[in-house]
Length: 261
Image (cartoon, rainbow, N blue to C red; front, side, top):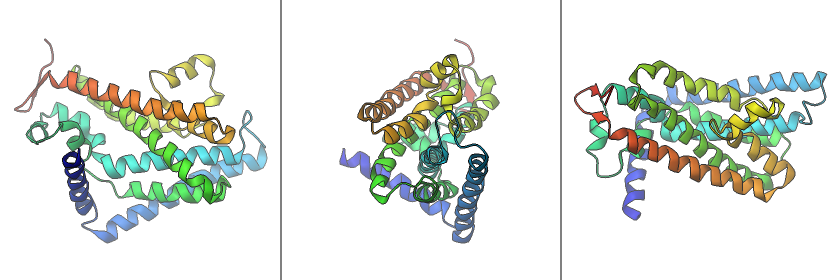
């Protein structure tokens, strides 16, 4: 176990050094992301100036949701930014370098890149929680824990979706665009959707566990919903690993994919 953690820490340190090799550029990306998130949230502030609530949710609830999403998403791309290139890596036959490493290839793939702007998302989450969502400092540990779990669900979902190219390489562009689709749904209050769509958001596309359920768990003080978020992180994380391992059996090195078998 200690050797595994040491290996992951070495991967992370290497990628962070590469990401911040140009400190000025990295800090600029970080600051711009903070500004971008705050500007986006101001749109909701203006909305709630005109309308007091959105099906029972107020400004503070939407701000908390956006903060959870920003923290989970930001930490994901900051620490596991290689997930964004996973599908292309598979299709291009570039998995070989990761298969030759002494541990399971998936952590190496996910942690092969760090995006400095992700730290801007993480930083802005604290501003959003304390200022716009009007949460206290004592709420931060729970918010961070639930956001970590939400980020794990997000990473698992994105990973599983991109692994589809093991079977259907032709959907590469669709797999890459899935990233934007999930993010757009996550930052919008899902409780406004109908029952059929909500069922999908709790199962096939577990977007609800990335933002809505963590927010409801905190605003209602519901320990069962908190446990549901952590359980979702474990279940979907395990599912993503299983899908990757299954797809890996179809992979061939030498920049080729097995299309049919």
